Structure formats: C-alpha cells, structure tokens
Amino acid sequence: MEKKQKRSSFSGGIGFVMAAAGSAVGLGNIWRFPYLAAKDGGGVFLLVYVILAVTFGFTLLTTEIAIGRKTRQGPLTAYSRIHKKFGFIGFLGFLVPVIILPYYCAIGGWVFKYLSLYVTNTQDIAVADEYFSSYITGFPEPVIWMLIYFAITAVIIILGVNKGIERYSKILMPILVVMVIVIAVFSMTLSYTDADGVTRTGLEGLGHYFIPDFSGMTIQDFLIVVMDAMGQLFFSISVAMGIMVAYGSYMPKETNMQKSVNHIEIFDTGIALLAGMMIIPAVFVFAGLDGMSAGPGLIFVSLPKVFDAMGIAGKVLGPLFFIVLAFAAITSSISIMEAIVSSLMDKFHWSRLKSSLIVCVYAAIMGVIVCLGYNYLYFEQALPNGTVGQILDVMDFLSNNWLMPLVGLLTSILIGWVVKPDMIIEEVTQGKVRFKRKGLYIVMIKFVVPILLFILLLQSFGLF
Ligand code: PFF
Image (tube, rainbow, N blue to C red; front, side, top):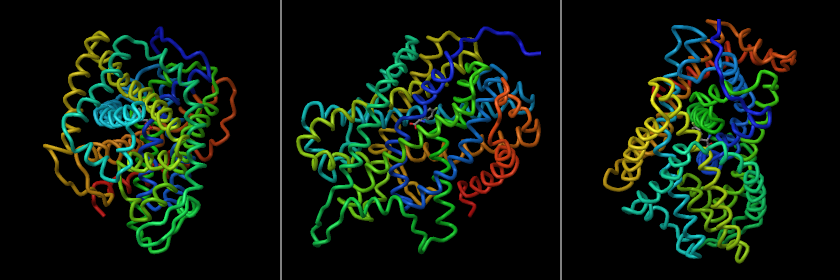
C-alpha cells in the first residue's frame, strides 16, 4: 500500500507546465543548442534533434512524470518504490545535477559579465574576436562573476522563495521568445564581405541551419550527431536527472499528463530552434563555415557582433536580452540546486538550511575549479564527440553523454521489461484520458530507447 503523505501540489496543468518550463528553458536552449547545431553542420543536427524530441523526449518525459505522480516520491525513493532492485537509478539521476550545477554557474557567470558590459554601455570591447577567450582565461573575474551568479541561486533556495521567482517566468519567458524572434529576423538580414572579398548573407546561413547536408558524412560522423543531439535533448528538457520525477510527484491526478508533456516539448524545442535561427546565420555571416565549430563560446562571440550591427536598436536589445537570458538561466539553476537540496533533505533528514549550505560549499569549490580550467588548471582533453575540452566540457560530457543515457537506458529496461509499460499507461490514462501515442510509447520504451541508448553509450565511451 502506498503511504498516505501530505504533498503540496501544483495548482493544475498550467502550474505544472510553467514550473517544468522554468526548469527546462535555460542556457541549454540559448547557449548549448546553437553551438552544438553549428558544430554538427546545422540541418542534420536539427533534423535529428526534432525526431529525437518527438520520440525519445516524449517517451522519457512521460515515463518520468508518471513515475513521480504514481509514487508521489522524489527520485531517490521513487525508483525503489517501482522495483526494489532499481532504486540505484534514482541515485545515478541525482548525480547529474550534482555535476551540472558548478559548470552551469560558471556559464551563468559569463552571462552576468556580458550583462554588466551591456548595462554599463561598455559592450564595444566584446565585439572583438578574442575578447571572450581572453576574458574566460583571465583571473579572478570569471570566478567572481560565477560566485555572484551562484550566490543568487543559493539565496533563493535557502530562503525557499523559488516558487515566487518561477512565477515571474510567466512574464519573462514570452519576452524572451519575442526578443529571440526579433534578433533572429535581424540575423537573416545581415551580410558581410570578408578580407578575401567573399560576401556571405544571413539567408545563406539560414540555409545551412535548415537544410540537412549529408554529403561526405560517414556513419561515424552521423552517430556523433545523434550522440550530441541526444545529450542535448536530455539536458534541455531536464530528463534523466530525477527532476521530472520530482515535478511529477507534485502533479495532481486529474491533470492531463500528455498535454503537459506536449506543452513542455513544444515550448522547449521551439525556443531552442529559434535560438539557432538567431545565432547560426550570424556566425555564418561573420565567421563563415569554419567559425561554426567555435564551441561553448559561440553565442558570446557572435551575439555582440549582431547587436553591434544593429546600431541603436542593439544598444536597447543587448542589455534586455542578457537580462532575460540571466533570468532564464537562474530559473534553471534554481531547479538544479533544488533537486540536489531536496534529495539530501529526503535522504538524510537534514534541514533545508543544512542541506543548502553543504551544496553551497561543494558548488562554490567546484565552480572555482571549473573557472580555473581555462587558466591555472588548463588542459586539453580529446572527447569522443570529436572536440577537445577543458574541465567544463569534460563535466558536461560526463553528465550529458554518459550518465543521462545510462539513466535513460536503465529506466527503459525497468519500465519496458521488468514492470512492463502498462504501469505507466495506467498512470497516463488516469481520469479516462485516452493515451493517443500509446503504440509509439510501447515500441519506444521496449525496443528503440534501450537499443539506441546502448549503441550511443558505447560510442560515448569511445568504443567505436
Ligand atoms: N534544462 C536546463 C537548460 O536547458 O538550461 C538545464 C538544466 C535544468 C539542467 C535542470 C539540469 C537540470 F537539473
């Protein structure tokens, strides 16, 4: 029998979607998606991502929310409620936000730094190509901004006012969408003639983004694209890390889960696609195809050029954009930190304050180490996705390309084969809701998810 417990609930479908969207929409959409799309050749990445979102994203989101709503437990205990032997999935999922939090704050710090340039009208220095790399390799500024960013996240969690903050998402998210659209439209109108006399236009750049070009692509290259897109999908919709289980545990039984899943997916993927439309044509115009592989610094290098090219409008849009981006980032880092803090509270029965302070010490130390990865602790590590990374990239790879696929794989084995999909289907159809994609769900959770994730894991471990 399920233990009866008091558990606060979201006020309904919209409350749930807003909270989940606050967690899902963040730096993953605006910073991470465009640079991966650019690195992996635009159109092919986009196509693969969208296919994965409507198949894998739908399956895993549904599964995790249903597990949370059925068990009314957070991730650390939910999986063992489903099956005694599978409790460790919750622990693996718990490790994901532990790894992500420090480096998310390091990037949040970059956003704050750029915001400070724009609000003090000193953004002109950021237009130069080398500005971003000279900034992040400097010391101690990136550390200070990271700590400021983290302190804001931590104070919100310690005071327990995150619900209040997430309410502002309702106003700020639509503003973010409008701004991304305006900037995207402007990016398409750009044109630039480089030193060799070659003129490139934003529309050509848009073509690279939307039209898949498979020419010269080997199977190995394609698998790298699938691996990148899969890791990005997990990161972006916040699955395979226990968060959606926790959110599901607060979802009222009468909420239509399928609708909520669709809304999260459409919103999250929509913003990512638009962010790509804003960044990729601009990168193509100013830096050509070669500039596309710039990696994690991509938006910080290319956006200042776009705002600069906008003239006066850029002076208004620039600071506004970074304010809203900072807000979107904070609502995500709150959910990352909350996932760790609430798990510690559940597991060890510590107070909110004690759990938060322990996470603070950990995240501050690790955050400093991540920042020093571009400076005193610099190294070059080749990663199986063909990039060379520093501490931030290694941690990112570890969580997105190893741990999350592993959590997804184990979840699909648990649900597809051990307890059987009926358990989830029953939860989705509570209140006589018809599960429209039931057939797809069963095929995905039993066959496609485990097989593809297994192949991708081998690939992520560098085995082929
Ligand atoms: N989904 C968030 C984003 O796209 O920025 C990032 C994120 C949120 C990662 C919550 C991890 C997490 F636990």
